[in-house]
Image 1 (cartoon, rainbow, N blue to C red):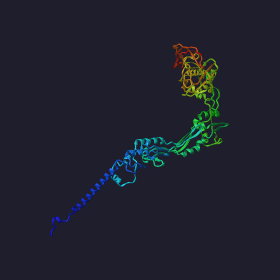
Image 2 (cartoon, one colour):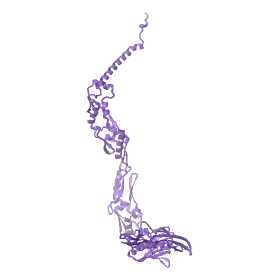
Image 3 (cartoon, rainbow, N blue to C red):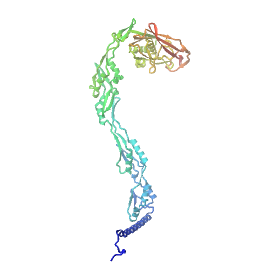
Image 4 (cartoon, rainbow, N blue to C red):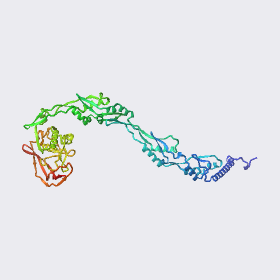
Length: 578
């Protein structure tokens, strides 16, 4: 019998409908049940923290959030505020968490313990759980404070790489040890500190650093000290020349030793030229060897003659000094540090045979200054003449009074005498030497050579030619001329108790040189004043004035050139001394 439409078999789609409907009904039932449990859990918990809740061992169960926060503040674990031990390279220190922006946020921790999120599973779980619950603290992080704390660590612990070296000071070898450079990686250090909070035990947290090793290993400094530096200044070195001996002290040696590093090694060098110039070496070497003695020249019938022959000397060159000293520097013991030094025979420049070749054939000029006799003048002018006599000035060379005579001190053979200071006569070392300066100036004037530096006295002194006189002062005023004659010039100087004479010997560039003085102008009357102090010297008054002097050069009786020297003299005040 054919089936009616109501009796047909269900299609697959039609067969699933009852099952889906059943599942939906079941899910709805569960949701309703869960919702009910959630509401029940919320109503049960309210705003309180469930019993048995702990944060880092602190019991805050059954408390409100405010109570929990207060409990956590009062009973906070020591680890939350304990300094964090850290290690920066090879240095250990600690960091205060709060100063580094690392703390526990008590309010948020209390909120977390109270389940402010109302997570359904946690809330429903309360209805069926009576056990303890451990809540982790909520950490606070202040990035600016953390970076500042790390920057402070870097400032205290960063260091530049330092290369090892050795230097010589006061006769001792002084070592500077190599130091490895260290720089804190501040970016990574911040994150490392943050991860290390709170401190866990006493083991330090190693912060990341970048190390820079020195190029010179420490072992090389030790090697150089042992093999060279310490032996070099272990005692004096002794040099011999014939029967003479010269001892050079360790401090003097050290002053002329330099150390440099190259390719990971230290090496030393001796500056033999500077060592030879050192007064502690130059003076004894001069007496050890002896400079050549130049011939003494004079004038006879207008021609230059040799009054006494010179003699050879012996010289120690910088090379010879260095060759003798260097091998001794690595040895110890007096005997091992003694060696001969080679000397070179040096001939005098001036001899009877060399005069014509040099062109020192005639007297170019001569000048004499008379002065009142006084013991200090005899001493000071005589000493200056002694130092100037025999000077040889080569063509183009500049001669200097101060360099030749030296400072006017007792050690240099000068005594106190009268000179002009601050516009009046006073007692000072070297007084009277201006007579020598004036004599040299006039010899230079009439020889026709070029003045380079000179200065007249501040007021006029009657015994000197007006406008043709000079004074000198150590460190401030010199008397200099350049030899532009084309031939060497020999300066002959001599003094008596009342006069000084200077002659220039060489080859004349002009037949004659004359002086033509103009009138005194701009006259000014002196004043009267009282001087004070033990160095005061009375002085008579004299008017001030200006004057011009022409230097006239002649060949064959005719003028070929003229130069004008202008001088201003201030009034010489009358001074009486208390």
